[in-house]
Amino acid sequence: MKIKHLFFFCMLFFSTSLFSQDSIFLDKIKLPSFIDTLFIDRDLNNWSVRLFTNYKNNRFLLNSGDERLAYIPNNPIGVGFGLGTRKIILDIAFNIKSKNEEPTERFDLTVAMMLNHHSIDFFLQSYSGYNFNYQDQEGFRSDISDFASGVDYMYIFNASEYSMAAMKSGLGRQKKSAISFGLGGFLYLTRTSADSSIVPPELYPYFNEESRIVELSGIGTGVHASLNAMVPFLKNFFASASITPGIGLMYKFVETESGSYNPEDPFIYKLDISTMLGYNANKYYINFTLGNVLFRTSLDHSNWVLNNTVKSKLAVGYKFGNR
Image (cartoon, rainbow, N blue to C red; front, top):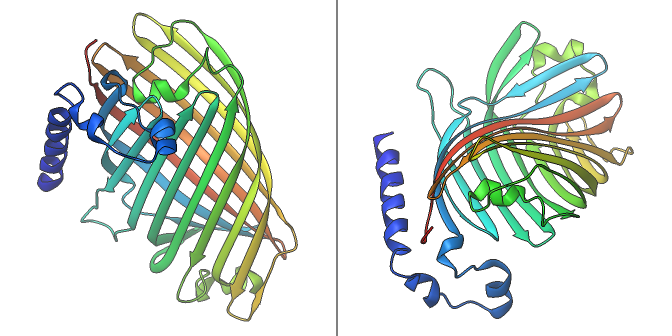
């Protein structure tokens, strides 16, 4: 941990020095014109840097009839750093492993982009090593790996009155309460694999043969809509909440110990719920976010899988420029 703490301190010091001389570094960046226009903000007043600690529990559930088997990763606590502008937010997290439990190897990356009325969120997560839990039986499987990646697009109808991205980056301050509606689409990719059936042999009597999965992969796309609300209070505080349901079509491939097949049920269902409590001062900001993202799809044969990501983040940021 000491090395990580030193790394974060150096990162913050380097970033502060980098941006301190009248945005000299930003002026020297040479990129293709369309990338420069869309993603690069050369105004130093529109940049912030932050450190954060987060909790992320990316579990998935396998249901077979009335039976449910849960796969839960260990060491859900992490620390990380991020950069933010009025156009893009990049956060990278590093996991903290406990000496008292089998480690889950994980990597998480999130990127948020804001272009006027358009909001684009990208995530990538890779996990290896899961606890399985069935009633009073449990164990650890180091061979189970889960990869997921996706892109969410949302058109915000009243973006001039409501900007969640500006709140997350600390670069905007909501002066009046606002309600926002959004409409867009999503792309979702997933792959879960193991050396042998993810259902342990001792649990075979409780689960059907098609649930003895060795590999499950899929790619899906769909539409979603959002309802968002934000309320400022006291001097620099604000609270917000958002709910985003969605539905789409997904191509799926399932390989079991006895064969492989493509599920006939094409639907995938999505639900994203999040809340935020924040404090935004002239040079510093503090955000606490709490969220839950669900993806559910059928595998036929009375089997279905649910990916459930519970996450929270406490971020402390510093804003560059003269304020």
